[in-house]
Image 1 (cartoon, rainbow, N blue to C red):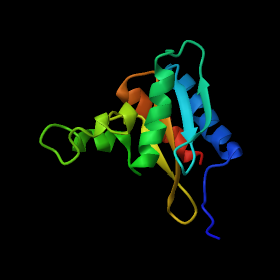
Image 2 (cartoon, one colour; image 1 turned 60 degrees about the horizontal axis):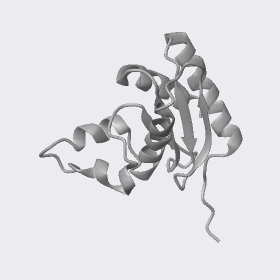
Image 3 (spheres, rainbow, N blue to C red; image 1 turned 60 degrees about the vertical axis):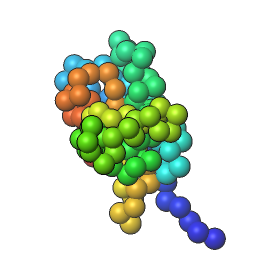
Length: 137
């Protein structure tokens, strides 16, 4: 039987706590979501005063980072008109997010085992928060 390394709930809680702490530090109420190796939601928080509309966006940024094993910010660059992934945001029933704030999570063997997504601030703020969250993994 093949074993698949993935994100456990304790991992997700640690990642989210680090993201929440950074979001507080920079004054950016955020939604922070973590998905497992299959792109399924493990945990999510919506900080007080974070936009309700960003709940779905944070979850989908985490999904996108896992689905394509790349930063959503990097995917944004490759998905502009004339680029190789133009139109990708229409795939997966519109779940693909092509702006900053989503990062893949790598396991001990270097494989992608999940993703983390942040939404609620500017792209720059979301990226700062998601990088802090990922660092806790």
